[in-house]
Image (cartoon, rainbow, N blue to C red; front, side, top):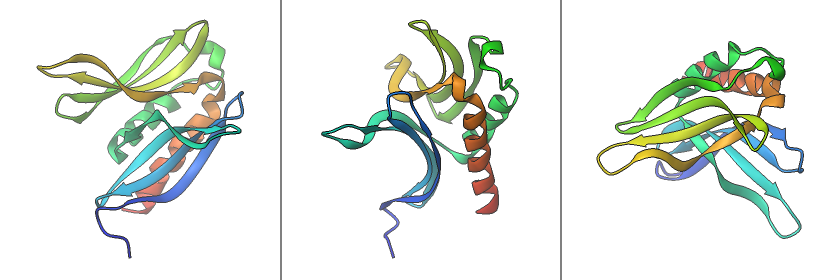
Length: 153
């Protein structure tokens, strides 16, 4: 039996294959007895296959709120406008921001950490950009994560 302090992937919810052959994996993990969702980019190259720093962890409560915000978007990516969809408190001074943004001519779904305290105000390095053209798949993955937490309370 693993110790309470160990990291453990509890279940893989699914993944999105990117145009370059890499993928973004959605999983439910546990660390020190706390369950959370991990959305992380994985590389597949000749020299390395595995997780990257690009990713974010979300509490079950934030996953539910993000899932609800995404469900309100149309499945047709061309009808989705840039803008903030929600800001969710992760802990004191740290929030997760869900937004649609355009960068270098490409529109995407950003899930990023925003820090606001006496030492710093702005974006942190933690976050991930999801391809907006996969919005229907992304909605299903978030729905699957919400269902996992409902079934495993």
